[in-house]
Image 1 (cartoon, rainbow, N blue to C red):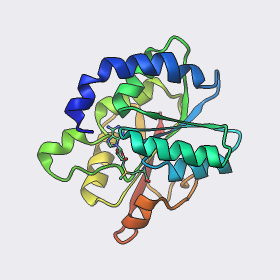
Image 2: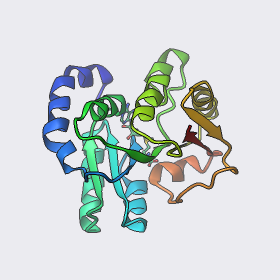
Image 3: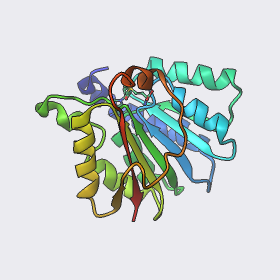
Image 4: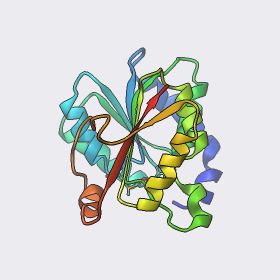
Length: 201
Ligand SMILES: C[S@@+](CC[C@H](N)C(=O)[O-])C[C@H]1O[C@@H](n2cnc3c(N)ncnc32)[C@H](O)[C@@H]1O
């Protein structure tokens, strides 16, 4: 769905999140979040391997969320929830929630690189997004980023390094928490995916 159409649905999306989705989140348990989860390949595998953790995946595209949910239901995973939402809108609503929510890990994996400079504003990783994540995390929380687009890697690294609340760590300094090759990662393996983790100060 084009972002312009999505914006016109903003108020309804916010109301749905508040009425239907946020009440499903477990109280008092730090969450694992994937922003732009696509078909949910990675997060389904992560949730299956970490039954004590509660995972949330969100994506702009409803069909992808429906597929991700079908996978979770087939695998009978109860520690996982998916929702159709725009990343910054979702996080902004989460910050305003009366019941406090904390994030332990946030993944952004093979996010759309928007190669043309005039489209960089559409990239998911932005200073405002890290502000919101800062409000939802405690020191030590992790932000994990992986891409096969060198330009987006440099851009995201710079956004993190210039942000007061997040500390950039090279891929070999902090172990990647869990490996699972999603369809998007499989396509990206033809290139040379790069990763980093940033830790909340
Ligand atoms: C290339 S796919 C990667 C999917 C998944 N992370 C993986 O590695 O398999 C990127 C996904 O991010 C979603 N996306 C892009 N911008 C978004 C935004 N602002 N908020 C939420 N999802 C977004 C797209 O709809 C798409 O499904």
